[in-house]
Length: 260
Image 1 (cartoon, rainbow, N blue to C red):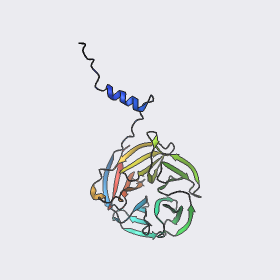
Image 2: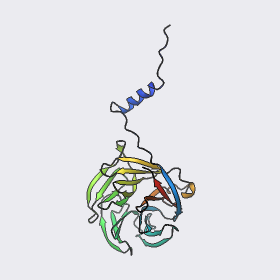
Image 3: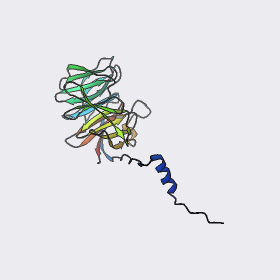
Image 4: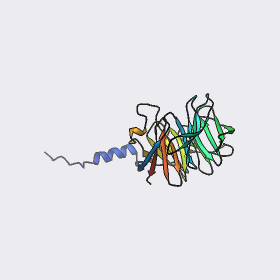
């Protein structure tokens, strides 16, 4: 009886991979970005965080939910809300960005963006837009806005007009559910809604360059058992290169140092 031909133990895996990926092969997986938790600070556990940014030693935060939406100035070490303006109870607050001496706050389904004076929080004017508003950030030239899809809109900071749309892709496939945004140089960081992931995006190409998996963040920093208390909120401190992150209804704000 002829002897059975020996098979390489990985041959089946290689053939299956080629069959699934096609002749072009598979795209490389998105790299995981390492991080170090430098410390934690108190955060209002009743704040349904929608937008977050750091300026002049304070956090500026937009909160959501009907009847609870607001814009706040927060002392980082204590978590104390030192200034606050309420949003109409019929509106649901969303992303927040600073443009010079003004703040722009999105709303979820009403198609209205409010412009506030940075210091007094006085309402200066508003813009209208189509579709839903989720996240917002400013890169020094343009505003970037998410609507929960895989698209980011680049907008004029003076008129709020759409200048371009960038499709965000992960390994060639759409990266959907983009939520709160933070613009840092040529990159945009985005929460992926209802996950523990933050993705790092090349704002020119829309390619996801890496991901930060915060699933291992201690339960003491979260609000376990509440399905609404998801990761959301990214603020960058340019003076130190530190990121401040939190979640909706989380009792803690985390200071992170990200790897390359």
